[in-house]
Image (cartoon, rainbow, N blue to C red):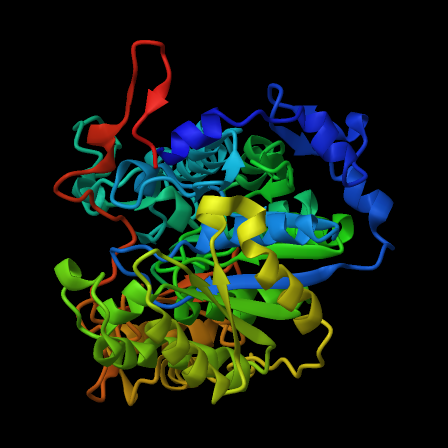
Length: 553
C-alpha cells in the first residue's frame, strides 16, 4: 500500500483534540479546516516560565538515491515515546513544492509513521511558503520601482533575487526590464527557490513578530557606487513584508497517524540554506512536551552542523540526544556497491560504507560532545551477519544501535529506540560549537571543512576573498557561516561518495545575509535554484476518478 493510501485510510482526530492533549486551549488556535491549525503566540506567553522538555535531534548519514527514512524515523520515535507513556511532541520542517514535484517526493514520513493530512502538508498547507515568496518578490518589485522613479538611494548594483517555490533551472539567470519603457532599467536578475530565500531563513530564526520585522529591515538588497549597503528598511519595505508574514509566523499544528501532536513550521533546505524548522516552533514544542523530537535536513555534515552552529547558538538551545539515521543498503551504496546488487549480503561493501557513518558519529560525539545513538531503518533483506557487524563496529566506539521498523509498525516499531532515548537524554554531555563567532571568516569556513567534513584544506576564489574582505570592512565578520554544499558527499563533489583520497573544499562565492545574520558560503557546483530530474515526480501526481490525489509519496 502506498504512503498516501495508508494516510487516507487512517482516521484522524479533530485538531482541537490534538491541541487539548498538550495543553493548548481552543481559543489559542486558528483552525484551517478540521485537521490543521495555527497556534497563537499567547500559548508560549502563557507557558514561558514552564521548564523545557528534552530536545532530541534526528539527523543522518549522507543521503543516497535509496533513501534513509529520516523523517519516518523521527515520526516513529515520537510515536514510540507516546507508546511508552511519555508526553512527546514532534517539530518538523514544512515540505517545499520543489522536491514534491521533483526528485524526492513528499516529506511527511512514510508507511505507518507519517504526519497528516499528508496531501495538505506536502502541497499548499497553510500558505506559509507562499507568504514568504510574496514577501520576497514584493521587496524585488519595490527595488526596481525605486530605481524607475529616480533611484534616490543610489543603487549601483542590486544583490536581491526573486524566488519561486518550484524547481526551475531556466530561472537561475534572467534578463529583466526588457519592455523598453521609459525609465525601465534592464538588468541581469535571477531566481532562488523560495526555501533558499533569506526571508525563509529570517522566518525560521526570528523569535517573534518584532524580531521578524527587525531582521527584514536589515536585509541588504544592494550597494551604492561607494559600496554603501542599501537595506529593505531604507526602501520602507519592512512593514509591508511583515504584514504579509503576520499569520505565517505562527506555527502549524497537525498530527501523526497515531495522533501525536506535530508542529510543522518553516522549511529551508540544508544543502543551500540552514536546514532547520523555526526557532518559534521548536521553543514552543519544548514548553508543550517533556520530549521533543526535531529533525535537520540531509546528512549531519549539513543539517546537524547548521542546527548546532547556527540555530542552537541563536536560540540558546541544545539537543540532549542525537539519533543518526542510516540503512544497511545505503551504507553499502556509500561503500561503492552497485545499486542493482544492494540487497545482497556484503560485509566488504558495508565495511567500506561504514566510514561515512563513522565520521558522522565521531563529529556528533567527539567534536560537538553530544549523546548519540545510531538508528537503523531495518529492511527484510538485512542479514543478521550485517546487523551484528554494525553493532560490533559501533560498540567499539561506545555507541548503541537501535533497529527501527516504524514504516511497517508505526510507534510500536520504534519502542526500543524510544526506551533507549529516555535513558540517553539523562546522561551528562559537554556541547561545544565547531568554531567561535570571533574567529575570522576564513578560519570559520576552514573549521567546518576540516573538523566536520574531513577536508584537507579550503581553496577560496579571488572573488570570494574580495567579498570576505568587504564583509569584514562592513563589520559583519562575527556572523556564523552557512555553507552551501552538495548533500551527497562530505566533499563538494557529489560523485565522491567514499572520500578515500584527501580532498579540498572549493569556495566559489560568499553572500552576506544581514537579516538572517549569517554568511552563506557557496562551494563546488552548488546552485540555489534546483532543476527537475529527467522524469519528475510531477508526472505521476494526478487526481483519480473520485477526485483523490494520487502519486505523492
